[in-house]
Image (cartoon, rainbow, N blue to C red):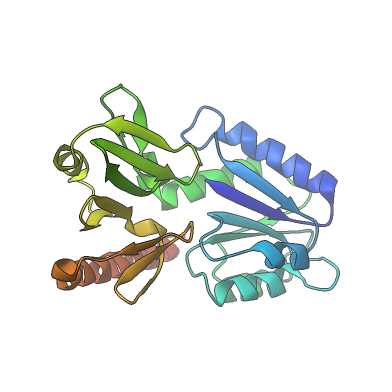
Length: 245
């Protein structure tokens, strides 16, 4: 899991990251990466769609506010989770306009951070799904960006940057991941995680790490249908979760 924190108060960011670390300790998310930014301008200068899973934004910052930054994010990235951090709840209505996942009031409390983390985990329970590899290592499926079969080995590229490889036939690997519909083979020797697709253009998937994965010509119709179903189910799940909260 990749987290970005945008706040001009370094002390507050450190407090928040410490509290989050405490909540994630011993979970599948404990190895998350964090990047800290002191201004919205600095963040936007490096940000790209799919770069982070969660962005924490302080609302009251010089020049660009957290709401301004969130609006820029939503122009090209509809899936990243946005958490607003502020001393006042007067901007609560704006948080709905950019589909914020949570509104975290300062000063931060461990109880409030706990509530936030539990909500985020509940929203995406698939984050805990894993398979066991031949060496008994667990591979968390939502950590996968894509996988490729090269020289009798499977190479898995991950969001946590802990890329792994293991010896297995591609057919056996496809059988291993077959229960999970968000992992698909779109061309020979390659699988992609549909959650990591940020765009589809020219019969290719553009992934969150900027990789471009071609879709086999003979699979185009099938893959288009699978991807359309996935996007629809994802939207439906989000609507149901919004109603529940």
